[in-house]
Length: 120
Image (cartoon, rainbow, N blue to C red; front, side, top):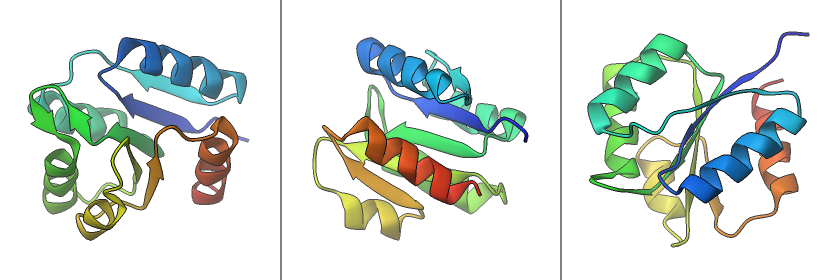
């Protein structure tokens, strides 16, 4: 069984660290970059080709929804994209091309279950 590759796009260092630890405990390969400029995110997704991208809606200096729209309009990557936010913007995220949405704070089990159902 190949290890699933998960990319985290989260600008909160504590949240990023917690998610990375959680996902690694679940035997996922985790890419958690700290350089979250929009162009870097797009380039990283193309370069890494993660199975799942977990992206915060509110990123410093840019909007996760805008990055999502850029990804969906400029690439044909099969990456599943899960958007997360403390605000209920589920419909906006799905309309922009997200495969799923979790409202913060969410249960770690909900995150793991979503990833597992998307990467069968």
